[in-house]
Image (cartoon, rainbow, N blue to C red):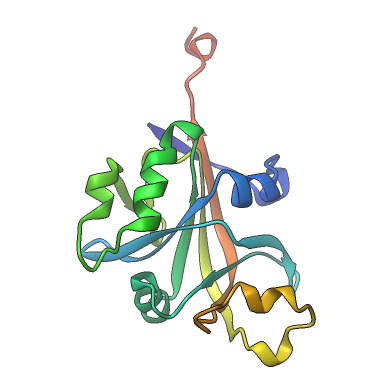
Amino acid sequence: MKFKELEPANFKGNPFKMINDDWMLITAGEKDNFNTMTASWGGMGIMWFKNVSFVVVRPNRYTFEFMEKHDRYTLSFFEEEYRDALTICGTKSGRDTDKVKEAGLTPVFDNGGVYFQESKIVMVCKKLYWQDITPDNFLADFIHEKYPNKDYHRMYIGEIESMFEKWVINPLDLQ
């Protein structure tokens, strides 16, 4: 499957559905050493006049090490048929197993990042900023419930440098 570049301003997806309902893979690293994790928290928007994503990763996640070490990360979004693969990538640690292989995903090493051939949408992001989430800044009491182990996330804001969508060949285009 091939990808074609997509201008973020022309993106027609619904980030609320894509992130919360469909989930995404956050991936960082390089060809010889990378890790990915499933996430359902994050967002997209404009910051500092740039198209950005923001993602949160707990320090105890293996992906955290890769996020800290590398300047870029990718967000990969999938069709529903890959729900089991996303479940594997969210419940297994890359420290202990080759979860990408177990999930049946095919890594692509291109455009400064690692993403997956099976993705329907890919965003390659360059880190611009990070901030640790601290309980002193919570303004709503319910948020404390999300951290019973006090393992607060680190938030990363990344510029969306490139965006790709799965390219489906239309037979009419070949005539």
